[in-house]
Length: 395
Ligand code: PLP
Image 1: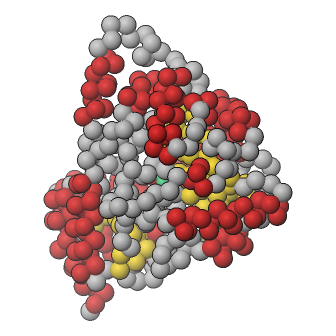
Image 2 (image 1 turned 90 degrees about the vertical axis):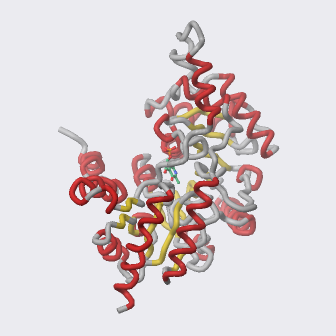
Image 3 (image 1 turned 45 degrees about the horizontal axis):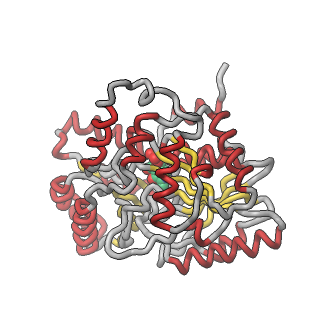
């Protein structure tokens, strides 16, 4: 009657969603001011003014049949040109609009890319800690996810484990930097090491291994941190981008896939992307927001609020005795659980009204994720609860 795998996926919410739902229920019972929900990565910084201006200008057009009509399956030609021009101006990549495919956000960019690349028996490497939906997307495309652990000092991938994980069946490696959930930004040195490992393995196995750069947080970096552009480091790169975080537009579902202009058989890979988009029903990304994104390629939300939140929560929690990874980007704080089982820690945190996500779901048992894209006042109000929580481990 129905597909059991899909039933399982649909009837068991993600751990993050479960916590979020619990928070809503709990707020109704004890009052919203006693629940500190750090579960979701939903931007709390408003979209830049340019987004509203662009949307209003589009809506003021007398004939809206074009605005609300279908675009080409791969996205409007002018929109793809604006995106390509922007990539070229920022990174000097030399990409043509014919290698851009507009999507419904990074989730669609990833599922389309994985389906476009997958051939029988392929494996895709996930570098822990990773966005939990990667496993779902890889399996749904037919592939096998292979998890590579991280170096607990730098939070960069464990390169000797990566060396062992790459086999003749490896089709791709998903790289997400700035990273959800750790907030770390991979250094150029780390990326260079990954690139030379993949070049060596591709030559050894006689087949190209693809880097899939999942980049929704590219623009969310604090201080003067470099985020190298992977297509410039490794020819066989596909960028999966989204405006969800960079323009604070997660509900509008808009992003793109960019195939490196130096990619092997790039035209055929692009045709496979178009085919996967077609097969999955991901044609013609939301027409109005394609055009809003094109008008706003250089707009940024005011990320000073995220930076201030980061500084506040990082310094307060480390002073209390929590062991935290210093986040250079995105809006997550990754904290070592004071007891080995992060699920038990997250459960204990709940009793103090603190909703924090256990790391097992990110391939990082023993850690929890705190999303600090929330109101500053909630962080301030939550600090006594964080203190009471850590004190229970000191007794
Ligand atoms: N990749 C990562 C690392 C994410 O954190 C998210 C969302 O939080 C996504 C992909 C999905 O992004 P989108 O909402 O644009 O589909």
